[in-house]
Length: 256
Image (tube, rainbow, N blue to C red):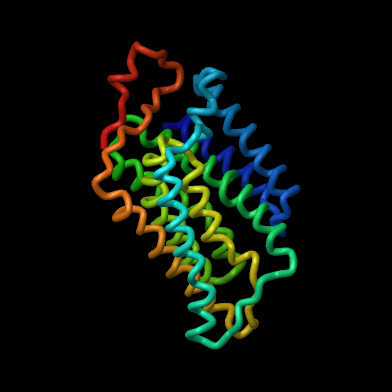
């Protein structure tokens, strides 16, 4: 556990230090490269063979059904913008560079953060743990990573952000497993949650808009559970670092 916590702290530090103030694709790609390099180094030092790094970090090809489910959940998250405008009268306006920034949001919040939170944190905790136990163990860690928002944006927005980070661990981890231990499906939903960086709202609507975003981010990702009900897919096994094929993977197979 000490090695896991050290690895988590290092990856979080790199992710935080490289976080772009404005998620341009260039800045986001630099952050992703730094985070991936740190996660790969941590995994190798913990015993993962180089050739197994893509699978160990969730960079494998996702299952199509999981991508479809993620797309539906992501679309649900985007509904907050027209609904908020209709209910409050406050206009939500796309920034002129929204398409450009969307690429950056996907690269940083979608790929880099999912690499850190699902590809490393959840995946390591999932080994020899049930799904629910691994999720519960990762919830406080992911809430902790959003503590800076509490300090900079105030208690209402900060607590909402920490709550979203903790609660969405459950559906995003489920998507990760449904995708075959791949970060690509949860990355779609994670990107949709953070698309608020592509819009502007009147200053007087900032707090209610933030709370509406949080409520939507809490509710919509949960749609992945009914959408995958009845699907029985065996997730790809995650071996303990250093274990070899055919030796102890059966013993180490995670429990549902």
